[in-house]
Image (cartoon, rainbow, N blue to C red; front, side, top):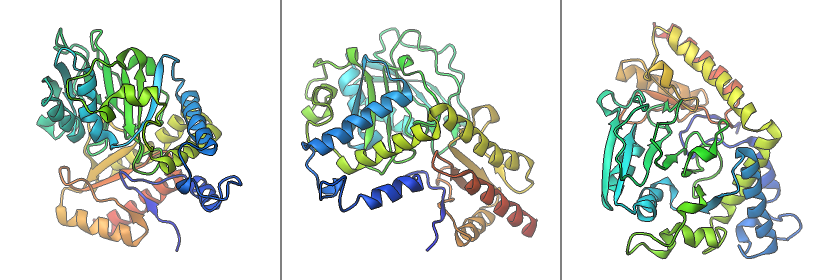
Length: 360
């Protein structure tokens, strides 16, 4: 069976050479006589895996020394609670709501204190990023929260909000490692890895050390305190060991490909192929304001639900998987993460042109 072009939003396509390497090591990792899946997380072999993975990530993102890297579980959704539990000292936080996940994070934070929605793009189905240059930041806000790339709606912040000196917390799940980033602008930058980095089950949290304290909300479980994991180098309990191993391989692949500058260039090229076609097409159209378009997630529609369904069905038959859009937007969505080859996007556009001719 040939591999398909997988445009899933996550779990998503992984680099083929990483999968092949993992397959070769499945039964015997580097002469240990066992799989990483079977290995003690306290073993020397796994200690090397997690330390190397962290160092490679630090190299790729130029993570400053005063930031901790944690490989955790519970996905981005668990962070929605963990962040306020650990950071809401004044019981106030400001949220910019640009999609479903930012909205869920805001709703979760509301359980722990006053979560202010200081800007939102919900009025136009989250199809744009609001102007964040001069927002009503609360004087006593513990942090300002954003979801930097909105997987469902295909929007991306091109400039970070002016937080007026407050700590910025960002969920970067779907743009993680897709372009260079200045980590020092964030207090916390975190994301689930199942979109751009590895298999589902790992969330990576990069956090400034001064934010990691024992001063957390009363009743915060031990497992939901950042200090627990930071102090134990992500080994407080059994970590998602195999997932971390694959992430580590992807970091090495990214280094080999030329790092994040090179990935940004490739991602811009890939996205341009699809957006240029959408802008010229009479049948398909993108749903996002042009200046706020994501390089990772591209939603598009025909304007006719039956036509959309026909397209998704025929695309699947032609080897293009997971193109159905999220129910809140409808239509289609192509997620074109780092591991999606350029030819996958070219072939998709070719198929879309044929479909447009046949259905004109």
